[in-house]
Amino acid sequence: MSDDRIIKKYPNRRLYDTEVSKYITVADVRALVMKGTKFRVVDTTNEEDITRSILLQIMLEEESAGKPLFTANMLAQIIRFYGGTLQGLFARYLEQSLNVFAKQQHQLRETLAKDPLETVTRMTQRSVEMWADFQKEFLRAAGLKTGSKSDRSE
Image 1 (cartoon, rainbow, N blue to C red):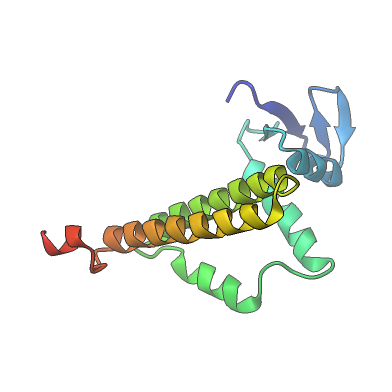
Image 2: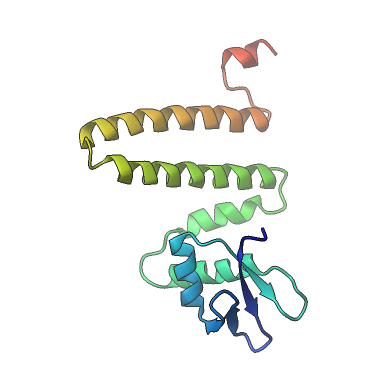
């Protein structure tokens, strides 16, 4: 984590980017996120890592402006996982799902220009395989049978 760009949050609520030695806004932090820059936001009063809080603030602003990404139903379902026995499992599932989606999006952008039809066909097939594997693993971790051979032999 030492390679992360450090942004300090001062008691006056201002953010200071130590790499460029200047004060920045939450919009500037959003731009770092969009570029894929790794960073940490540290509260100067107690040295606490508050990166998640800043990212949640950015998400709230994005959700309030324009067309939201999350529906009320989706948010309610996510809230129901807090404190439940499957909270950790759900968090890993969601993170891995987003990683798979981002990876596929990146691959699509790279290869679409070469042969669009073949690219879409291949990626759709791979996506179905990955989701099936991931769903089986999720159900197995939750203690549910998936109907696969490995479940029958247990």
